Length: 287
Image (cartoon, rainbow, N blue to C red; front, top):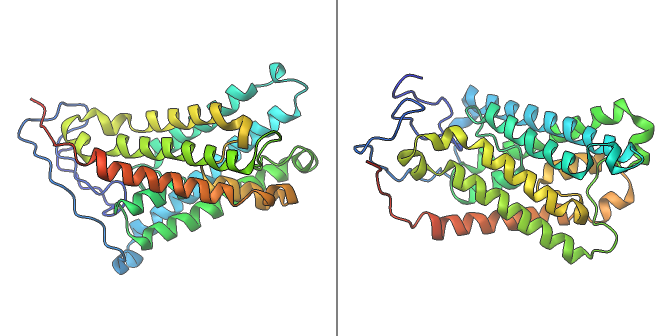
């Protein structure tokens, strides 16, 4: 990749210049300059093709995410036993692996959010404008609805009978348990996103932006292992909304607020933690 390449997405997670070729060590003369916060409103974005291209990328990524993951969940529930299917570990790998792949594919276009909670957290940290944040959330939700709809089209009978991959608080757990699981799980995810895409680390260690999709996908995998038995693991309001709309049964809507409130609280806590703790660490250029 050529030096001094300018990303065409000026706002969002990828608004920082790359001042060295990928795969090389950061230079001692590469100083870190605190990037200015994104404006609250950016009307000029509405006339930019990169703005709409980013929205399309978010739509497609969330569509593919729901398609693969809900199909995997349906395959698990159709099996007579966990041992004859991918099991809970396989479902967790499907979610984490798809996030890894899709963040890698879309990071240079939209920032690879694929999750309204991630978008919300980055907005609170002033990494993108409200204009872009709202557009991303709308496109993510539409993509999720379409992805779940395609799965239902493939298996209409089993889809309704097996729960449609909708998130619900499982028997034996309270709504408070579910809310807590969603808050902490989303905090882990969004905290990882901040750490993996931090501009200070990118300036110091050039390998960080290359590897960013890996820890993000791995965080999703680990959170799913921990919370699938509690809520089926939401940590992504678009994923929960898409499955709930297409499944459209009372049990999917009874606890649905948890899968918006929990992730948004978790994302807000991660943004606050990042701003207060991580961003306060002095930058030291690596020799």
